[in-house]
Image (cartoon, rainbow, N blue to C red; front, side, top):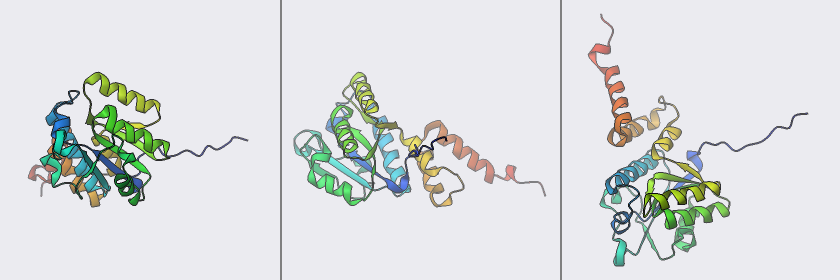
Length: 218
């Protein structure tokens, strides 16, 4: 008799997911050379807006605000549902306030983004995974000291069975069907503003459908 294998879906379930956003601060992002500062900011803005569209709880942190890193970027200040929590430990999962906030969401799937990939992104990812959470890194919303150390950190995480994804993949994964009207406008809005050529193509398709030229002749 053939055994039936029960396997967990590879999709990231938006009903069980929270976002941990780590240290999106200028002192760190200007020191991270694996990705341009502006591209990193744009990607994280897209991620935060995507999380908001799909009702994903967001827990955000800062570190060394007064001494080195500065406040959270102005681009996301008004997008975050609550103020970032200041912490001292490199591993956000070691901070009791951050841990309490994450556990209060009741969710067991974590997506993590921010700075720096080598430490403050990787450490909570490894820690949460060891505690039984399903963890994925939003790789294009992270940056490291340089391209090599960023990639090495991602490789180590992948070897530890931690997923790697992008903000665009998450948006499309959570939308699934463009007839889902509840999130359609919000998702299209994010793509139109920050989705590059793909966003422009979707806008074009949408506009063509409502243009007079698309209407049947009377």
